[in-house]
Amino acid sequence: MSEEEAKELRSKICYGLALSDWRMLKDKSSRNEEIVTRREGKIAILSARSLYRELYGNSKEFIPAKSASLFLPK
Image (cartoon, rainbow, N blue to C red; front, side, top):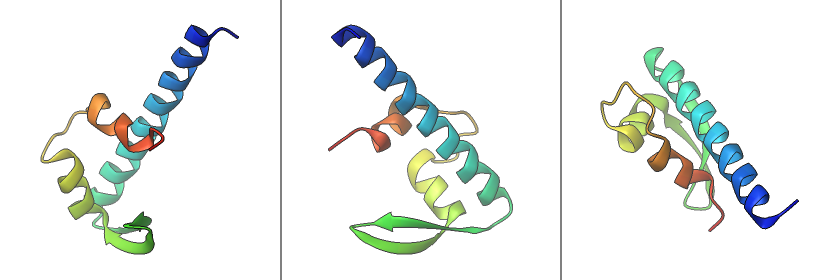
């Protein structure tokens, strides 16, 4: 696999993870549920609605550029 193919595959994987994360948050926030996540290196239980608003604002559409950055290595 060439470097370009690997980069394209990584991009598609990050996009897919971000899309599934957005869908899960949108679904859980509509039912006012909580999620378990990692926050500042610790496990935290957060309101899906407040986390959705923090990440996506009031947007009803998927924002791939902003979302995908959550899954990129730091």
